[in-house]
Length: 213
Image (cartoon, rainbow, N blue to C red; front, side, top):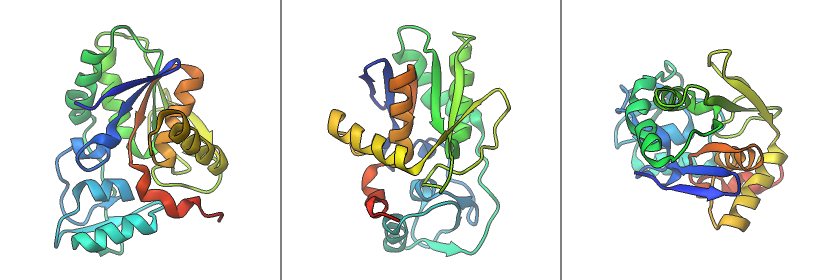
């Protein structure tokens, strides 16, 4: 079970403390050749296994995959995990950890299946929990694509690279937590608006993004 950290009006579900650093490793390993984000790839990479990459994948992520012996394919079918897997795992954990209904759950768009699963679990007890996903408003970042393949009832919030970088710095300064840009942006948004943020993806994978583009 990953911890739930209070930050002002927000509760941060620290999925970056998972064994592979991301909420995606709650799901079974997909077949070889599927297309994954950098953090998802690091959840499932194994020596000799083949995967394709999508979205922004940092130098640190690519080097880790190389060291682990993963083979990178030029393209693949996008990974589409079953949200029910996340309902049974991280969703069930949140039901056990929360003392009252959260206003909302916010999660970066790349982990949309996790968001849907979490909402499914929470709404069995609290029907009115809102779902919010973060997307990139301009240049994409790891786990922050420009669009989200999610139902229309999930609210979309656009995040700039500057806002994500500021959130990452603030989370580090105020909480002593080194999170990735997307997870930190979710944390900062929940801190401002209330609710639960899914903070996935450790920050040491994104130091190369701290250099001005």
